[in-house]
Amino acid sequence: MNLTNQTYTPAGRVSRKRLSARAAVAFPDGEAYKGAMSTSKPGSSAPLLGVLYLCLAAAFFLTGLNAIVKLLVVDYHMAQIIWFRCVVHLGFMVALFMPAMGLRLFASRRPLLQWTRSLTQLVTFTLIWVSLIWTPMTTVTMVLFTGPLILVALSVPFLGERVGPRRWAAVFIGFAGVLIVLRPGADVAHWASLLVLGGAFFYAVYQIQTRKLAGYDDPRTTAVYTILAAFIVSTGAVPFYWEVPHDAADWLLFIALGVVGGLGHFLIIKAYQHAEASLLGPFDYSQLVGASLFGFLIFGEIPDRWTWVGTSIIIASGLYIAHREARQRRKAA
Image (tube, rainbow, N blue to C red; front, side, top):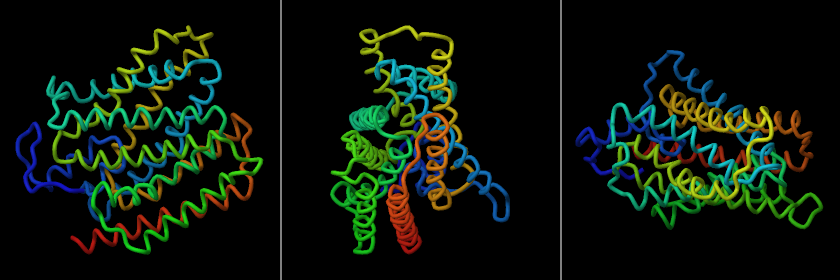
């Protein structure tokens, strides 16, 4: 993460160390937490608490959100689903941060990059959620594990980072795992799987944009902008596609979209307050547990053995890349 020695935040000019610590409590995704200082003490149970928070968020809340979308998208337009998701989430973020910051919460030194990043996030979850119409939840989750692999490839042209032959080998091996999961040309393949890959690609772009924003804006401002574009776009579109929820169960599902998403986000924030990114990273793969559970219990989805083989290759490649990056950071420290 490239930060200048002195960077601006609404509280004034602060050092790299203080900005990194503050980022740990407000950025909405793991990339923004990387390099953040853990608040836990040696020998305490705080890192374990961070792991628990992340596993709850990844295995149940994030995958639960996808399950709700998969249930609703059968009867309702995607614009309405996105709007409900954004309203509750944005309200949560504003209620959390505006009392301390006021209108400064929306002040950005890089507004174009903020809006571009926010639109990228909108494209990301739109592609992923649309793919859920035709693609099993477990398969979607498995393919999304390619995000770290794509990020490595994009970090070279966009961030000027150097990637060694071992990490490049891990990237290519990981994508071989993707081919095993998707098996293009086989009967199990569906064109909607390409939407998932597109979602993983745009999420990697989103992470790169997050890195570029670090050091320019207060992390709370970036957290709010994350969902702002989706809220504005969906608000403009939803009147054309609005359909009154059919019954009380559907109303509960729509409300749960925002509540589950907001709680998942809050747990991720708490996780990175208690433990370092290097410890938490591998536990993000606990999403697979939740996706498999929800997929089987709600939709009757059972991945075949080749899907599990491909997923194992993807996860192993991602973990190796995380290990190599951790070693590089330790050497640079």
